[in-house]
Structures are given as C-alpha cells and as structure tokens.
Image 1 (tube, rainbow, N blue to C red):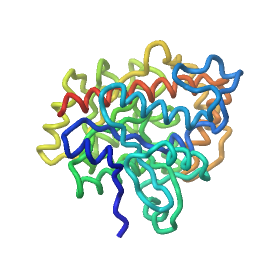
Image 2 (image 1 turned 180 degrees about the horizontal axis):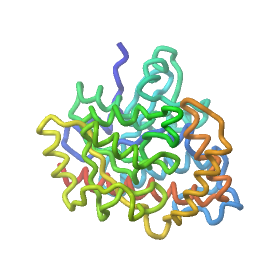
Image 3 (image 1 turned 120 degrees about the horizontal axis):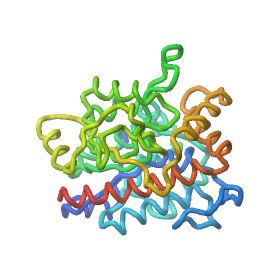
Image 4 (image 1 turned 45 degrees about the horizontal axis):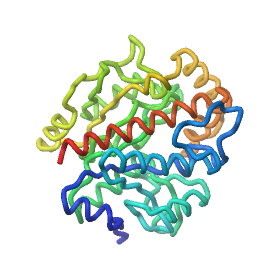
Amino acid sequence: MTVVTLHPEVADALDQGRPVVALETAVLTCGLPRSTWQADHGDCPEGIDPASPLHLATSRLLADTVRTAGAVPATCAIVDGQPMIGLDDATLEHLALAAPAKAAPESTALHCAAGTTAGTTVGGTLMLLQQAASIAPPIRWFATGGIGGVHRNWQDHLDVSADLGMLARTPVGVVCAGAKSILDVHATAEALQTLGVPVLGMDTSRMPAFLSTGADDAPPVTSTEHPAAIAQAHWTMGGGGVLCVQDPPVEAALDRTDASAWADAAEAGVSTTGPMRTPDLLQAMATISKGATLQANIAVLVANARTAAALARSAV
C-alpha cells in the first residue's frame, strides 16, 4: 500500500499543534501558464517573480503567503508515484517541469501505481489529507482558488467534478472564492446542499463567482463571523467538509458581465473533454481577457491562502 509522506516540517507542526494549511498543485501542473509573465497581460502581480515561470512563481508565492500569515504550508502532490504532503523547493521545481497531469480522486491511485508525477486537484488533495489523518493529527484547513462543481449545460452532457463528493466526506475546511467561473454556480450550490456541505460566507451572503463578486441573484450562503467554530461543531457531529467562501479582493475583482462573457467565449471555443477541460477553459479565458483573469486568479489564490492561515491559527 502506498502511504502518504509528510514533510518533516509539516509532521512537526501537526505533532506540536501548530497551524497548518494544505495547498493543491493542479494550479501548478495544469492551471497556470508555464511561461513567464507576458507584457500583454498588464502589470505583473505583486509577489510574482517576472523572470520565473508563472505557474512555479505562483506556487512559491502561495506557500510564502501561508508562512507569512503564521501557518505552515502543506503543498500536496504525487511525485514519482509517491503521495506527498509538504514539498521542498527542489520537489516543487520537479513538479513544475513534469508533464501536465492532474491527480483527481479517480486517478490518484493510477498515478501512484504508475510511478508518475501529478498535481493534486481539490478532490485529490482532500484524498491525501484523508489518508494522512490516519497517521498524524488531521490537517483541517485547505486553501484554493475555486472548487470544481457542476459544469454548464449539464442537462445535455452531465459533467460534475469529483471535488464535490470528496468535500462531502472529508472533514476539512476549504477556503475558496466559490466555484470556478466556467461552472453552473446555481447547480453547484444545489449539489453542495444535497451533499450536506455547509457553505459559510465571510463578509458575503451570496456565493462568489470566483473572479467576481456574487450577483444579487447568486445562491445565498450562511454569512458568519465564526467559520472556524461552525466548522469544528460540524466535524464534532460527524460531518464532512465545510466550504468557506469569500469574494475576490476588491481591487482585483472582475466585472461580472465581462467575466461571464469571457467564460461563454471560452466555452464556445474549447472542445476538450475529461480532466483537461477545466485547465483548457481557464487558459482560453486568460487569452481572451488579455491576462485579466490571470491577474484576478492569482489575487484570489493569495487572499484565500491568507484567510485559511488565519482560520488555522484561530483553531489551535
């Protein structure tokens, strides 16, 4: 049996009861461009090394953000067939150079058996955290940009992310800006309710639209100032995951009309199916928007990492 490996820093933090925040790596292997920041994308986001590949620079920035906010980053991945929680910089570089691949719940075991390298999706990361909880104190907080969910036009072609099922059965608080903008947010919210996943809004009463704020007709969420306490109560009663949502930073949020139009254009132009559909749609949106969605995406990732660290600190 393949047993997840905990980086010594992560293992020590868990043993000592210090705050830990999990980070996914599908954003590294598939979600962001492997080129440096391009001039036609506008100003390079703060904290991003313009001389480094954007996918690697962003992953480094997220780990640094968690650390600066007072928690230990636990970046997750499958590296040469080994599930790992906590990566040093050399391993992060190895992952960045590997062929684009995603370890989702249905494919994680395949990567382990084949000895391949892949970035974990939200669902894949939750799978690793679930296994790690059998050998160490559990990691309770996880930061990502937006979760997967129910894709648009699901009535004609059923496409639902495995993120939702893993979230429902894994007692972890996932901090995000809602579901990715290429998804059907109303159908995703209904699926979360059906699965018994509490959706807690931090300074918002509406489901955010990933890179833009939620519209007045967006699905309502439970607005609260105490997400960590609610999450702990949910876990004590045997519940699974908790979704903690916040709007993108005001200075980076996209206009809802523009974001929707870019998503529609990407949907019309991308024919990919299967695991690579979401990365291809996001890349198409970045091209269509001349980098605007990339800037917003990075800002959302950083803000969520910072918030997850604060929640992890409050829970110890």
